[in-house]
Image (tube, rainbow, N blue to C red; front, side, top):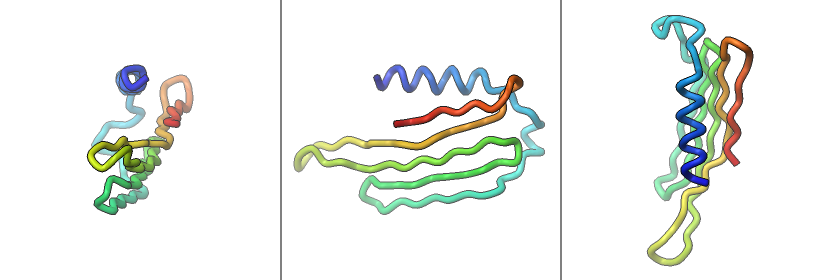
Amino acid sequence: MKYTLVLALCVAAALAAPQQRPQDVQVLSETKENDGSGNFKTAYALSDGTNRDETGEFRAIDAETGIQKVTGVISWVAPDGQVSLNQI
């Protein structure tokens, strides 16, 4: 499953063609929060239609082991329309 998600992200990034020159893209909004214990929230919106909103939560399995659960959505404008990738 992890491999599939990484592969999907790589394919999506490779297929996403920029609609503007990179130097013309402006950051419209940006949020970064990290509580230092593995929980985070990051979000941004760009003028080319790219958006990202992710939340990460650390879940302890035992005293020495844990997992990182990440949920959110990444979207961008492709030549044939809006593309969204949901992380669940």
